[in-house]
Amino acid sequence: MTEQLHEGRTPVAAWVEPDSAAQQTPSAEFWSVFSSNRGALLAGIFFALIVACALLAQWLAPHSAIEQFRDHMLVPPCWADGGSTEFLFGTDELGRDILSRLIVGARISLMIGLLSVLLSLLPGMVLGMLAAFYPERLGAVIMRIMDVMLALPSLLLAICVITILGPGLINTTIAIAIGTLPGYTRLTRAAALTEVGKDYVTASRVAGASPFRLMFNTVLPNCIAPLIVNATLGFSSSVLEAAALGFLGLGVQPPTPEWGAMLSAARDYIQRAPWVVTLPGVTVLLTVLSVNLLGDGLRDALDPKLKRGQ
Image (cartoon, rainbow, N blue to C red):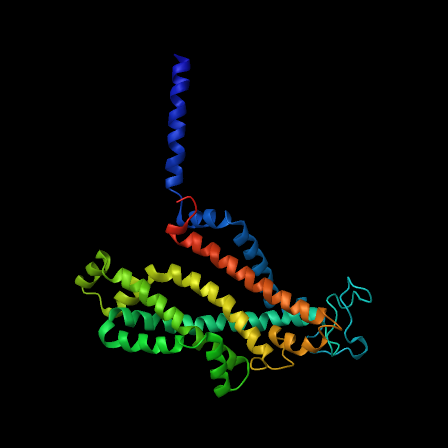
């Protein structure tokens, strides 16, 4: 009898686990899927370190980013022959500490990426919603304008805008935002069109909800997941475009320590002092790669159709 009771307990315990798994909260489910992606998890940790360096740049940078040590020009990194522990990553052609410039430059590059994403994402959501809810009146006009903007590559469009506005930090941010605006507009419109005909939207419309409420309170929250993923990937593209514009001399101007401008100033010393070019280039590469991997992990965790095991 005891054995039968003992045997009867096993199925009960087996049924409890699925029930507890079924009651898993959305945040716990998100973390479970995201943490299973090792690449995204490591990328998130690395990107968090970059963000921490950007926020704490004035305390972490060992020297001023624009201070010139005339007696220590083109000093190699500390692990190379002739290096010094005073300048861990060496110095550039003007004797400025490369590590300090990379740390302070992280603040510039990340700020350009964040602001350009916000300046393109927010108007893109509004334009996309208007195009989805008013396809005959506003939709045709908005989408034709976006098609014209998409006819030019985003970097080329940014160069055209900077040619008109002039180089600088603010103008670089605006130029990159204009170049990435069509992507957010089209994505928002496509996501909204899949939601407009659903029952909950019809019920809200019958209940007397205003068009503004339907767009931004009812439909937009259900379109956020793909926009977040696209914004994450767009952030890396913005950082890369800012570096490209800085390299061409059209972005942030010297002596501001921006990664692309550092590459542009150091290209004449690529054979004599390769670390002056290599270190900023590797920093851009790892930052963009980490954001891309992070975006892939967010896509898998936020989109139920792409979750692993389904």
